Length: 345
Image (cartoon, rainbow, N blue to C red; front, top):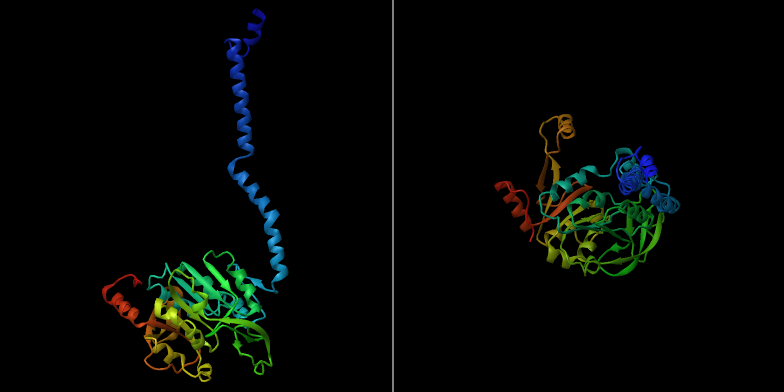
């Protein structure tokens, strides 16, 4: 008994039982402290992420590089073909049709569209869908061209509210030939069953469908339709007649006189018949010197203004906006009463 006490007195004068418990507790605390130091939460999370990257992400990246054509990825994460006309524009300026997208974003900011759907007809590689998806609950992009559809999928892969469908929108359900310019994939024409006009184009056989049929099960309203179909606007609108009457969306389209000359009805007149009013969004000129206007847009913010077209436009390649007449009245209320946005029914 004495030996035991003298041996334990170097550590603690207490009883043998209390010494044993304290020793075990100290040893346990030391072990736990070591484990927390070695496997702290940030380090453990880092190890898990490294394992996931090594196991899965490298495989996905390898597959994409094998499947996609030679392309350049910008710092923003946007992929495109640099040998294509549109791709070369993106490579040079960082974005394609920046002023047109800016005008669309400005107009959409005037309306409450967060609970609605944007339809991108002729989405190409997804420039408009990627930029404007922030204004909508859901975006549905249509692109029949197989050369660019995979780039569209790749660019929209991380956007949770963007869906994409490889189908050409028209006024009937069928299959038609699609001629695609070899140097400009943005120039593509539907040719029915005739390929005689596609002598210098790549030709694909693609399905066509109407927008009404594609969105028949959609349970939220369509608020905005962007159309870029190289002169086939009237066919797309005919196939969306139910949506235009039910949801009254804003429509943007490119007006090219050369394409309209081949149609049985001008798209301007066609939209007017649906009780739409046509506008162009322009930069306000604060000075008579254009260089000062450009400098103001660069340093401050672009001053935009809606100009209504009371007759057919005379200039080519203009992005026009068709706004339902009832929304135009509400928009005028905004300017008069200083409201923030037009509420949609």
